[in-house]
Length: 114
Length: 114
Image (cartoon, each protein chain N blue to C red):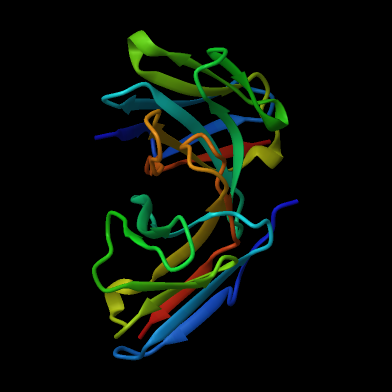
């Protein structure tokens, strides 16, 4: 069985500050990990994904995430927040064992203030 | 670009009505998914399909059914809508058999059952 925990349903940062969104996973086999973003009134869009290659993954819009097996974590970071980053972010996991479906976390709403 | 479209952005139905939510993708993807999204609960998988006329139950299939008569179209059916099915419904599609494949999402249908 697989699961995802996102710490903090809401995270507030100032424009220009570091963004850190936390994700911890549980998986019985090596996982594949994803971060998706949902802007208001839109569907989800892929930010980045880890598929057992490099542990530091770079995505769109300046975001990156690091896979840490020892900590079972896949935290999302961005050095400097923009107002346009305000959205809901979802971490998801699937198992690296043939066909598998995604299990999503409950989401973290990122609020960016001027 | 992959495009996933959903038949309605907003839908209001009455308790007991039969409701059809339609999803169409234009990238010849084998796999299609229906999720519901509720505040604080993230995305939960209702049903998915990895081939025409095939369907698999997700985590919360009760009260729902699906139909996939053509590769590009995946319908979610609420046989007798109830107020607890008021939610945002998201459709997604992906290619291939591996869990690493990116899922592409439609804009969602916000369903209200009165």
